[in-house]
Structures are given as C-alpha cells and as structure tokens.
Figure 1 (cartoon, rainbow over the protein chains, first blue to last red):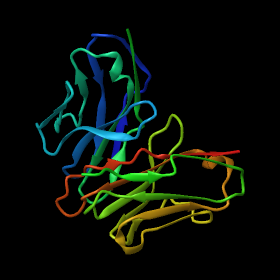
Figure 2: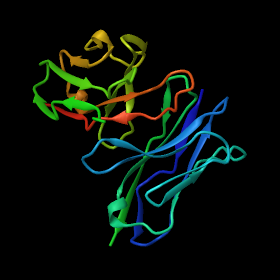
Figure 3: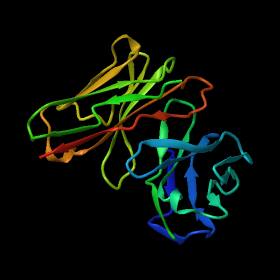
Length: 111
Length: 116
C-alpha cells in the first residue's frame, strides 16, 4: 500500500542554518503531497502542499518540490529560526479521503 | 471562517472511567476525522466520517471506543472504559474531501486525555 518515510529526528540546527528534512513516498497513482507542522502545545496545521509533479509548495520561507522521478518531497528552508522548532509531518493522499502520514521529524533550533 | 472546535482541552480520569470528546468542524466540511496522537508519535486515524456515514473505522478499538456524527455536523468520541494506554491527544480534523478534493485537513487544538 501507499506509504511515507521521513528522516528520523530529532534534527538539531543552529539559528540561520540551512534545513532539509527528507521525505520519500510510495504510491501507485499520482498523490497530492503535504507538509504539516505541529508547534509545541498546538494542533497540526498545514504548512505547504503540492498536487502534481514538479509543483513547488511554499509558505513561511519553507519550500518543497514534488519530484515524481525520485518519489520525494523534501522540506527545505534557507535560514531557520528558533520559532521553527516543531514537529514536521509529511503526508500524501490519493484523493480518496485517506491521508497517509509519515512518523514525523522533530526539529530543534538552538540560538 | 471559524476553525475546528474541540472540547474539553484537557481531561484527567481514572482507568475504567468514561470520557467523551466533542468536535465541531468547519462549516461546510463534509469529512470529519478523529485521530489519536500518543506523545512522540504521528497521528493515528481512529475514524473518518463522510457526512454522517462512516468511511473508515478499521483502527477504532470498538470494544471501548465509539463515535457518532449525528446530522452530519458535529461529532462525539467516547471511551468507555478507559485504559492507561488511552492517554493521548485526541485530534479532530475536517476537510472538503470528495472526488477532486484538495486533501487539506484542518485540525482542532486537540483534547489531551490523561488516564491515571
């Protein structure tokens, strides 16, 4: 079945460092891809999404490109801030009501 | 527009007691989800409704968990009797899912359950 694999955390970086969180997927069709973020003590919220190959989703300085050839949707940010500390979840859906989640990657940014 | 509303935010009970959580989705969202999130883990889907019908409840422990969505709007999730391992955050989410839907879920802030 469909699945999502994320890099294990925690990922610890210094402020202003470059961030990459890897996400790869397995899917039989043409899924839509998402990154959700969960800040400490808060609910999940959508960070960005891409619905077809080569689409780039972006929000709050974060970007991710839907790469069908490598079945990847890596999350990147050029310069992280302490406020970016959170847990990041990669997910996919085939549009059939089902959302498949990765296990989450905890990001810790040190000042 | 108003977001997904959940209550209570926090609940502490003893094992074998019962608890109920309530969720009101975003107006017009036909699909409603209940997830269980144990500390340090990703969300686990418990049940998914499309309007007032159940789409998926394969991971719902039906011997102790029940959920309903009367009239296709708000929903309640009940646990009876609670076990220690039910300590988690219960997340409600809604979406405009359907054929051609975008797949974006909108989450409430969650209800944190502690079972002692």
